[in-house]
Image (tube, rainbow over all chains, first blue to last red):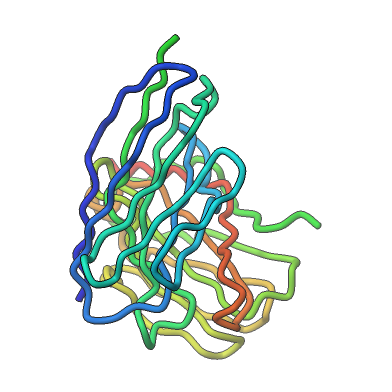
Length: 111
Length: 114
């Protein structure tokens, strides 16, 4: 099975950098995903890692270490609109494109 | 493209009532799925479908039925609503290849069972 852990809440300052960690125990997966979800809205795709290493996409980067069961999402130059929940998810082997999600991290960006 | 649409946006049911949550997508995606989201528990997979005529159970399937008669539509039926089914329900779709990694979510249905 899969067990995915993330911090429940984080607070950061506008313009700063924040790292949101995700640890997992899984019997096997073929992708680790990060989604952003603003309050009252649907999740939207942010990033995807299948191999170890860093994937960069503008202000957002995601890192994966399979050997350590660890991923993080790095948000740079924080903006107020980045206040949202960030969901870590894995795609288990044999489950098609279905995802198993962690509980999400609610990020509050303050001026 | 409208993407993934869900109806209704809000619904209140009494315990024991049945209803169907509608989901449709116009992107010709093979994969469709239903998740429920409860506070502090993230999204949990209820049922999914890898193509028309094929469905399978996810993590929390009890109390829900699905069918997939067309590529576009994937309705979720609550057979006899219970207060424990109060939640936000999201439908999602994606292409079938593993290289097509992005799932597209509908706007959600907020269901309250009293």
